[in-house]
Image 1 (cartoon, rainbow, N blue to C red):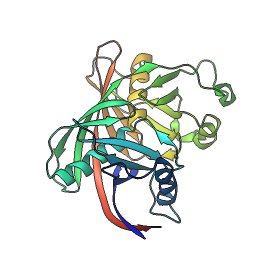
Image 2: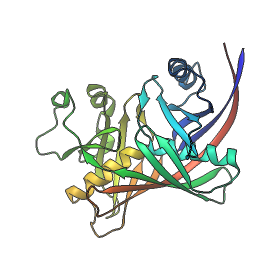
Image 3: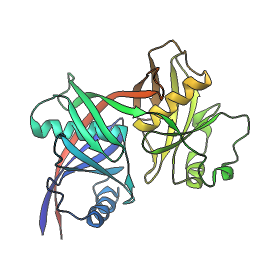
Image 4: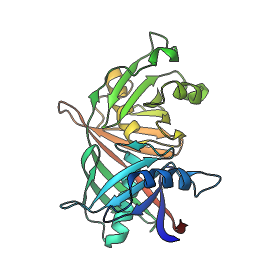
Length: 271
């Protein structure tokens, strides 16, 4: 039996396991299988995804994300903060990190907090770009007057403006478009803020989504739901609050800031 060491972290309740596989010796099919086993909340450790770190020249590490269902996702805003925390712990410093992802290069800047188990991380998330409407979108039955935006943060998002996020059957809606991350948002409570819930591709309803927060902030600003003069959009999610700065560039660049929290180190045996 092979012994593996994992760490568990969460970004606003969106939780991840981190595995260092420096030489990339574990086959992708095996990692997908392990993600399903380890992420199961009843028979495994429990997490929304498995982050695998491999060595890459010129980078702090390469990050590959396996969702809880074993599928691969291009990017995660909460995940990369957790990943950076694990890399920082291994390196023994909080210096900036250049991380290679399936959505391109990402720069993460870390800062300590009063809690040694929590860091704040700012991630240069890259451009927000338009996507075509996903297959099956019409099955959601959105009222034509509702604002809708289909956006890419390196991974696909569909953002819908609603009157009250708490009353929406998000599990039902998300199941109709499982190939995208579905965010529902309402304005406030502050003038520069939105409240968001999310159904994530490959994981279901999660407590927070970093790439979703970026897409939702962009949509909210374009719809006039937040004060356009504010430098940041505050995004309230079930698991807590992140901030998103949007540049005036074309295409708009998003910078995500939020915490990452260390949960545990776990030793696990695999056949």
